[in-house]
Length: 350
Image (cartoon, rainbow, N blue to C red; front, side, top):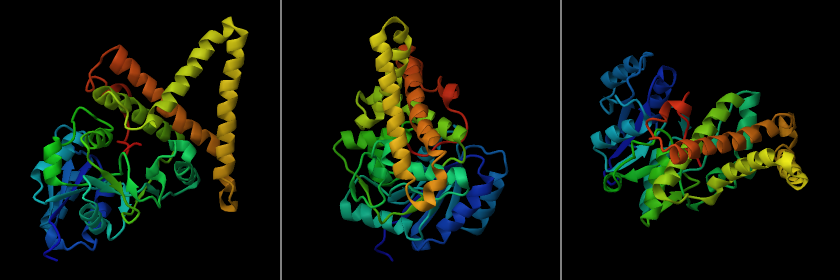
């Protein structure tokens, strides 16, 4: 046991009264030695009773601490927790995700085996109800995310980002922690800094957690519009995207708007518009049939085209909105916070 490193689990939260207790219980029940583990919750000044729950846990478990996060956004909370951490290894976790009992142990093992700068697992999903199950099914389709390796549950190797993350604390301090300008996509921005500095981000099939997708089309749209919006700021800062697939929804939607605007003036452009729209509809239909082809998935066929549309149109709309705000209007990131970044904090985007 003494050969295992001291681990600090960090959890940013705000108004999570319903979820923070089960989250802490699951961490306390993990198979990582309690003597080598501390849990730090950065609370964004919750006003729903979350702080009362945290105080109760701190009174009964010496390994649990919570720190105020007056900034009330994820990156400020993460940075405060990291600075407070005494562990040599930092494991980020989220209140809305369920974790395997060996999640922390596997993170530590893969970090040591690969000598990577950041390690994590694939995006497994756990859904409840018809619509959420359909969203989860589409989530794992290559059509929804351009074939991102983070959706491949069996992939083992280098990636451009991972869900949540596990780092050595000294490496995080060397990188300068999370950029607090990024209200969303702070994970992507840190990952891009790692890879651009020659570091390695490693995904392992042994690191298992289960993410709950958004329960409605409206929530899914908001989530992906935020991903697309803040992705622009990441690209603007680093002058390059982490992956060229991040540009495709925005370019596709921009070309659609351009063809719509010009089609009244040219028959050729009108035909190009028809081809443009028909190509997407056919691709969407093909992906729908492929994704829902199994007997147990046939019931999702009517809704899958709309879910794929939310993934692509939501991301593309957010990306174009980000181009207007960040590039054309030159607005600052904090100035843009309330223009599109509303609702529950989305998980890491790919």
